[in-house]
Image (cartoon, rainbow, N blue to C red; front, side, top):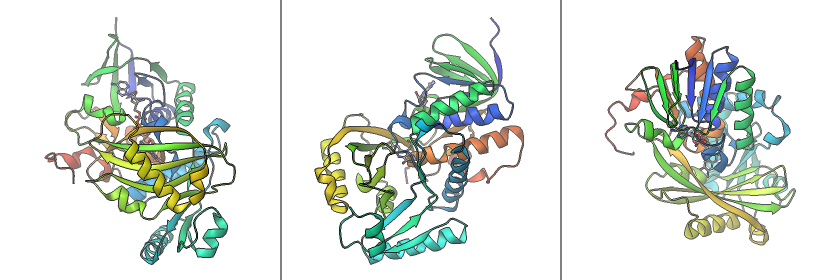
Length: 377
Ligand SMILES: Cc1cc2nc3c(=O)[nH]c(=O)nc-3n(C[C@H](O)[C@H](O)[C@H](O)COP(=O)(O)OP(=O)(O)OC[C@H]3O[C@@H](n4cnc5c(N)ncnc54)[C@H](O)[C@@H]3O)c2cc1C
């Protein structure tokens, strides 16, 4: 049988793959989306769903910022079950050093057109009455948002289908090369471009790329409407997210539309089993209670873990693979893949159509690791 032919075949139906499929299909390309399991069931189902502008580097800022704007646009069409809420982020400063960081961040964002404002201690207490006394203040970024990632992935996959894409779910891709894609069940597809959006599994198909699993724990509580009002992140989080060697935890709390509170976060390398680890969970919850003492009396209803696809420079891999120019990578989004899924898709659709890209692709090209020698830092 002659294999079906597509312009683009996307491997992996997480939020990144689904967004790429939707963006390419909406540009009129013939698209196939191949997922070995269910849409949105990988890291996308484990993530926190915080859509956030970050400023670790100019490249990270560019991708998160363009993505945040794309989320605000997409929000107009998202169904209710995607739970898009523009809660804003409160970056909480516990001391003067962190307040200085809040001021630096404020200047950085304002220079680049991102709305932000500083809150002093009393304004912070008014905004979030359940935070402990004695915090120094916060940076408020009102454009940041919260979504429920797995339903967004399903919505984007359906949007791709509505625009003519073919969805193949329940079949694992075992080989991709030279414009051809082989599935475990024997099916074969041909495509001018193949996008590998398999997240932490991208190393199965591309063992040469520098993607490592970075484990995270999350806890969700019962319903306590109004207990948390904004996405809360301690500014100390930046130290934790940056640390590459050691395990770390940081206070991170998110209000869900249901009134539930999602509590994070932890980061670990070298722990590749999905099991909840009591010592990490305890450290994470102690950190949360240190910022919001009332959390200690809330009922937790579920705890889980997930894996971020981390790269050595904390930027994703978006662009042609070193081995085969017809195969594009869209992986390595670490703890920002919900946010940056839409920017990634926009970059890929622009590259495939030859249209002007919203931001430069160069900082994310996998070729930057051509001489990668296995070092992680
Ligand atoms: C604890 C935690 C908290 C997080 N919080 C946030 C947050 O607040 N904000 C944010 O922006 N990001 C967050 N993230 C990161 C975010 O969840 C990920 O970056 C994002 O979900 C990655 O999406 P993806 O589509 O690349 O990967 P995945 O969702 O893992 O999708 C990959 C898909 O590929 C499929 N697949 C794999 N191999 C094959 C194959 N051979 N053939 C076919 N299909 C295959 C898998 O089944 C899977 O569905 C968090 C992550 C974790 C773990």
